[in-house]
Image 1: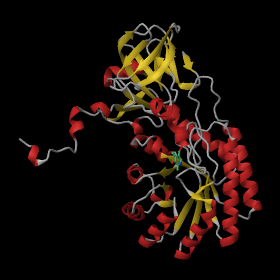
Image 2 (image 1 turned 120 degrees about the horizontal axis):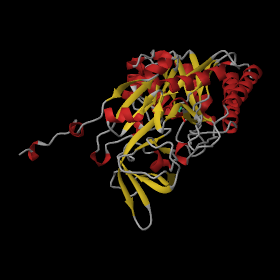
Image 3 (image 1 turned 90 degrees about the horizontal axis):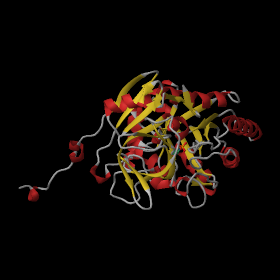
Image 4 (image 1 turned 30 degrees about the vertical axis):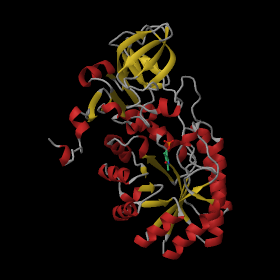
Length: 431
Ligand SMILES: *Cc1c(COP(=O)(O)O)cnc(C)c1O
């Protein structure tokens, strides 16, 4: 039994990929392809590794799972059972988190360009709101003055694996800039808000500790200023998500021990120096928790050899996994039924969409690949299914959860009928 390093829950048994003790060949025989598969054990392990690393350095910690990485109900339920808090960015995510059993006070809503009726919904559901603009704050307190409120600060330091995922800095649409932060707390305090949090989220897919530290120093300074000028004590300080995961073999993972030690070292010394009391130290990882727990299985239906290229044609495209096309992201792909065969050819992996950009991988070494083979696209648990679409009128695929040799369908494959859902013809076209 050989592990597919570094993913210990992915095993090579006689050339076939097993996930959490389940053969992917058996899964796809039963549920067809394309198919998302998630390992429950790996999700729990990622959560616990992070929790334990943080707890070594400070007692009052909270992990808000950032639901947008993967909102499958089963995933939310697993993380609720682990004791996670939840970061929601839309009313839909709040709705799903409540359905999964999260208590409203454990849900932090961080939206941007939030409508009044959405604020109304948040107030009614009683979740904690993290304000993204003074406009949002003013509109909120007209509807209802919450007991507790947080402010998303733009620390003007951003980072991330792609321009599109950097969520702080001078050009960012997110958060409130330093110059206006105290004003936001003042408005909230005068309106009668009693308890406060402070928040930032600088970007996604960050593999080095340095950007987190620079931004955290800034957030702590800003908190200090608010504390001094308004006398506000923070119940929690949220340093955001963005903890990266290696996608390429051999890429160095984020050093969790270094992250925890340096972030909490800084936090502990600054809360003392700045008289900030003992707030909860919060992080908001999405990708870190679920990314490597998921794979996307896709069947080879076409081998096309042109004078210029060799293409592997598969049944999943950017309708199901948009990251390669949207961010130029690398996903490692293996031939799940030929794990023991040496790489001998270079191929592009092409999806079924009528779009020349629908390529999941370029110039990758593979063993000889044949029609009917099964490819596993790794690290597909975050920003995979959640970003899927029905583009080209392709129904979305099914999703399976596996655990210790057991498996369960957690999302049905859509049917052709689902393509019609909600559509109707105007009466003048009905004939
Ligand atoms: C997306 C997002 C996160 C999580 O980002 P990851 O890179 O998946 O950890 C955390 N907080 C907020 C506000 C977000 O929008």
